[in-house]
Length: 400
Image: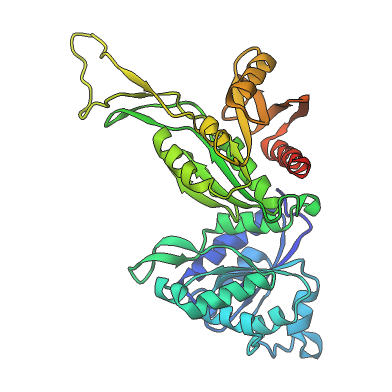
């Protein structure tokens, strides 16, 4: 998505993660945004205003009493022409200030006086993030309509591991893009819990070889994104892919079909919708080799297979199952194969496409099949088709 014409105020608070704000500034400007930077005094101890000025192409603001602003009303004027304020990194102290309405410097004052949306990207030590006080403040901010970008889990500058890392700049950028998405779909799935599977599975043959397929996961991730845009609480169960987690989506990583099955069994409890986009391997080795298979006189090894669980059918057969949506990636006879799968799985809706035209591509062509017949979604970017699919699912839920 382009951010051309969007005006953003990027705020930095004190913390080692301030270095990430340089890359975030670059990405926002590259996407077409007009970026104005405001820094706290503590932030200037970690990265210089000159760096942010060079990357944003605009003067950087740090002082509540800066005489460059007419009538010294910087806390008002600097945000009035902005569409969005993003604070990245946002320290524990800053989260507390915003949650409780304190305003003792330029950044906290203009946030309190804003008329536009606010995204914060928390960045702090794991113990600071998990403290009940910080969690209460984060909860208050969410309830006040502030969007949280992260934090992420991982290694921290202090050497400890855990939640509290600032989200990577590319992830914050996706949250900004999410903020500017058209809101016509917002609320379609509000209050609903949606589980989505995506990507391939890998079935080990030996320690260095697997059975897998060419699924990129792009369609499944697009569906998870569209469901989140529509207001749903989304859990994404993903096979091995090289894709970032969609904004606001809880992701569970798995490798094998059996691992995906176990994750789905746990996730679908109490869910409203289950969308099975993953290209799950139909077969696995009965007994994978403990060591790497060697070539012996050119004779290929004998492999004995077992059938993997049918995850979608299992979910559909549960008592009071969620609304189940399957995906059929076919190479021929699209309509006939999709209708047969719809009946065999005993599900209300299936999305079908020709695999050779969709695997790994950014575009797709999808036709939905249900008991009333076929509904073409046309051809287009996968996210666009995912939004159409989500709208169709939302309409089906209302009639259910």
